[in-house]
Image (cartoon, rainbow, N blue to C red):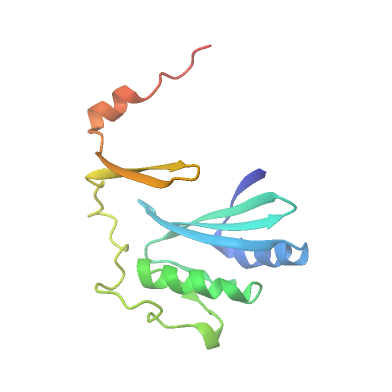
Length: 157
């Protein structure tokens, strides 16, 4: 499977989504994560086993236009992004805009804060064993010095 990431401006998102729709691409996901500049959004589209991703950075106080006009089912991802991150998604199709009530959360916008983000204390390693199910074990997260030492040297043969 081929995969391509296209850096995109928020102002170009709707036009590019409409072009993908016209060319017969299906939307496979919208991913959001916090970065120092605000939010990194990745919109993934598939056609003939080729994945094309539009990647954009939205400032913390910015917004992004909904793509539900092209891919109606995007409302699930867009409501999720709004509820979990607090990112303003403009003009979600009115009949499926949950207005911040898509999830019942103990804490509003739990992934909004970037400054207080912490590395997990432990990582979960999952081994899939044919016919035997899943073996999940927890191991302590590497300390920064150990993680740096474990990285392979750049360059080489």
